[in-house]
Amino acid sequence: MHEVKSLKPEPEVSDAEVAARLSSPWKRFKTHAALHFADHQFLRVLFQNKHLAGPQMWRTNQPSPAQLRRWAGKGVKTVINLRGVSQASFHILERDACERYGIRLVTFRVNSRDAPYPEIPRMAKTLFDEIEYPALMHCKSGADRAGLMAVFYRHFALGEPIAQAKEQLSAKYLHVRAGKPGILDAYFEHYLEDGEADGLSLIEWAETRFDWERFRSGFKPDPLGDFIVDAVLRRE
Image (cartoon, rainbow, N blue to C red; front, side):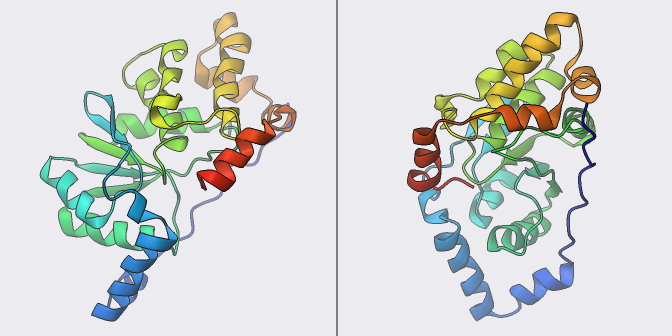
């Protein structure tokens, strides 16, 4: 098996940086405008791609500060950001809103167009074991990265077999498997054929048998699917 480097630590965005970006009405307006237009929040005002992934876990697209206020009112204790730490408006405003509304914000970055690193399943299990519920997890569109983590959640937290849990990656949630995000479907199908068939748990298989570099280099997305994901849906 090829050696895969460990995940790099997420860059820090200090409280002072967040405060500076929101330190005046004009700066706050510019940050909200960037979220609304550059990050396409205007498309998510009425449609949150909101679904229950389990009894105490929601999956959605990127929530706005107003939506986070409503989630706090519904009792949500933890928000899991799957997009990663960023200087972009979505992260600045999410940091600020979660602090104001008493929500714990956890960043757990995953990819929508690449196979999960071998350590990701174990890290996801640990995450779901440790966070406070009810919880919400989100990426930008709520389709691919949220789907990947919903599979992990249903498998590790609810004990659902992968063959059933992988239904969290489907068109119902706007997941398009024909393009590059289809590598996520192929990942779980590869596990069922190569790992579960031999009695290996997902974590055992990912850490001892899964050849990450060979698998990702062998995956060939459909060009039409790529066009839909990149040019039409403008997925992240």
